[in-house]
Length: 415
Image 1 (cartoon, rainbow, N blue to C red):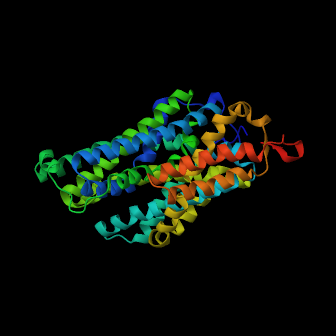
Image 2 (cartoon, rainbow, N blue to C red):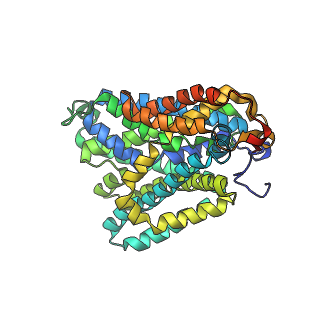
Image 3 (cartoon, one colour):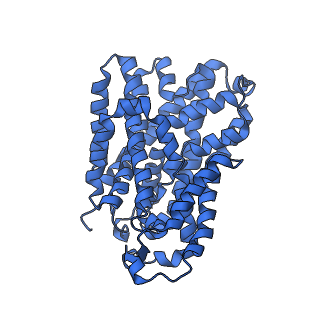
């Protein structure tokens, strides 16, 4: 296990833990994503100025609290999301969340590669297949070096995106007449506030469920909590603001499209590339950890394989798979709720991973996922929050009922 620098099959040792600044850059690299800008653009043109900021701040505060819970558990135990899932889902039962999380991340990686290639090809006239191949391979190569490469890439990308994006937004707002003009804009097609809140929370709750994969490297749990709050409450909010400003001034939600329209082609390509690269590498890293839990193979090798698969099918995924990925993502929020519920109920079991005895499959967790999906789909309120709470509450009720009898050794296995 010592040669596995990703620590995909056991806890991260104290000697490999990192400080808060490095982890904050990694998590900001995850949340700096073009899809959030698109959602921000939709909200910016569908809400009043005050309602937009209220929805963004409340929604991302909810995301921050949710991911902070998972970050605390990840840092406290040093375990990936997938290894944490073994406690609640069982050893083979954890293959379900690992497959859902891993496969969706591979899919979004492919979509991300195409999201970079399509606009760059249109702007430059270069062959889209070459752009996909080169960018996909570069993104895959960097993830091979694990959390260290993610840290270095994010340290470069996050300030660049923040500075160039802010300058572009300043130009856009100035051109439209200033903030006072934007404040007075009346939405042509208003969006219900609850729907807007659901869009904000739903924009990153799936990837947020994987928070433990990254912040488990934190030296102290409070560092992980603070990192998650900064990344989702501040970082994701910034992406929404970028998207809203561009949509309101030029009718374009993606900051790279805005910059191209402003004649800033090279900065646009840099921002778009770094924006997607950081998020894609985080997705690929997490996907490798997920499939490592299922197969027992090296997460590093699996991340590379996943990157090649995502690159090969990038255009197909972009054109055909986004709806399916969104559907799959609906099953992910309950997983986070179940992990949190299990930790709160049985935290003493998490003290020594190697000595822990776990079920093979815990049917109560599987049923709780289904209930969480139903709660998110049918109950009134905010869909992703209903899914998280539905999964957590159902697990908290079912697990004690299903497991009243003391499990015998034949029913349990070592981690």
